[in-house]
Amino acid sequence: MKLKTIFFGCLYLISTICSAQPVPAGDENIPYLMTFGNEAETSWGDDDFSQTFFFLIPETFKEPVFVRVFDPDIGGDVDEQNGTWDTRVTYSIYGGSICYSDKDAMETDPVGNYKSGNLLASKTFMQNPRYDNNWYTFGPFNPTEGEFVAKFGGYVIKIIADGEAGNDGNLYRYFLSTSSTENKPVEGGNAFAFEYSFRMHDDPNQISHIYPYVDDRTISVKLSNFDWDMDGFIRTVSIARRGQMSKISSDNSWVSDEFKIFDEEKNTSLDIQFIKKKTPPVKNNNVVVNVRNQYNELLPFYVLPIGGVPKYKYSINATRVNE
Ligand SMILES: [Ca+2]
Ligand SMILES: [Ca+2]
Ligand SMILES: [Ca+2]
Ligand SMILES: [Ca+2]
Image (tube, rainbow, N blue to C red; front, side, top):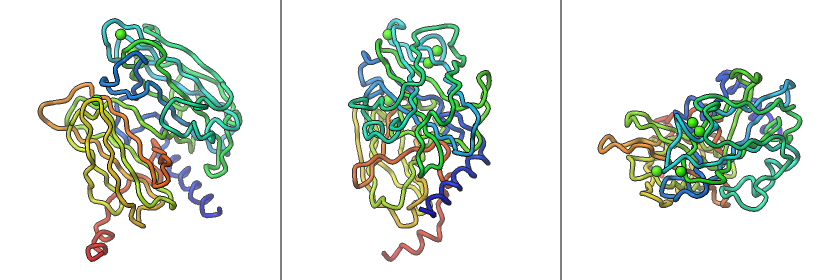
């Protein structure tokens, strides 16, 4: 327990140094989160028309917080049009005692009690020039309105984006802020998800990253990706892994592959790299990713990777050659 406290203390220290809570965050190099209206075909890249994120606010932080959404509307700039703009997306924010800890909230599909907890705020958007290429702000919220989670040393609030009608693609970002009018990071805050639905860059030279955290119970992981459209490579780098290639999905399909976790990788983050092919260029590529452990539990993806971005250490691998 003590070790855990120390560990999460480090997490907050690292976050403070990074001092930024955009979602997606800088090291991820992901342009936008992505959620389609529920009348879209899944071949456009969204498997379930819903995305859940959790914000972490350290116990020491006592000020009100705001959840800001960039381009919450579905129309105009940024978004992906399919026929006419007819898509409706509702963003809902939850706190209270089970907003995080309900088992349905920690799963990938919008079923059961995934909207667990107390509804703190909600707003529905369609095409709306007022919020096109612009921010909408939820809050203020008192951090104690979230769920206190001892192992995080702080409070968790949840935001769900549900595509409730239409067939267009909503692209958007979040920011956990101390201000209602600008993006001011919450010192020591972070954000995470158990499944990531996102838009890739069009520029083939841009590499996107997701950082699942591997705890000390993890023996093996199963990495799954959806609708990658055979766009280049998906590769995992870690402190002990130079670059392990994964199976990649084609249009409208899931693929998975499993690999064993090395002892050195426990209590570190993996770096899953999404590397585009140069030719022919794949544009507007939407993809969904999740990672499970041997118990079929999902590994959290932190926007600020715990322990920092992992760097491969040759010396660790050199000792493994004869294993
Ligand atoms: Ca449409
Ligand atoms: Ca827009
Ligand atoms: Ca949008
Ligand atoms: Ca795709």
